[in-house]
Length: 177
Image 1: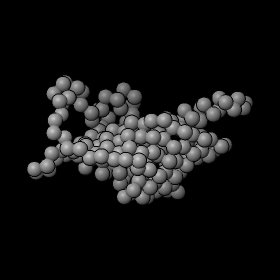
Image 2: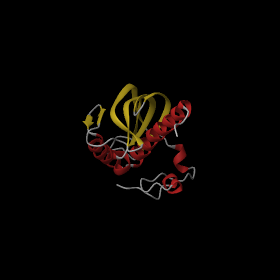
Image 3: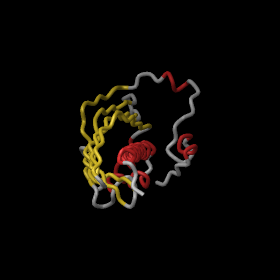
Image 4: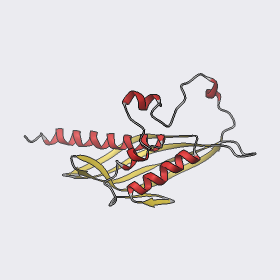
């Protein structure tokens, strides 16, 4: 049975947006296996400025950096423009990334903010959408010293980077790094 093309387009857009969200979740939580699974495999490519590598290599490098160099990481995805042609697609997705870096000696902690776009070429392989080629485009960025953190004392549940993180546990997302 062939779906109405409009329904197929909706499904493809939904699946691609889900993939983009999964990628960001994996990066923020430092889950290398989940992040690597977002790519087509060794033939994929990710250009993230200083780090340019195949998807699986990029996932290994970036999740290690996130876990070793940041106290917290968080991506917020904005609008996506997605064009699907059969089993190939292109997408441009706006994002804001926040990365809290621990302070050192006489330096306070800092927040790095990156505002940009993921420009992706995607392929449907084995029934699912994967990133084949990605370029991270920087629109602007800022680094700010953390001089206060009023919310740290407000009793919030703290984020974790393992399977005990509340969101990961609720969604059944096993941490696989």
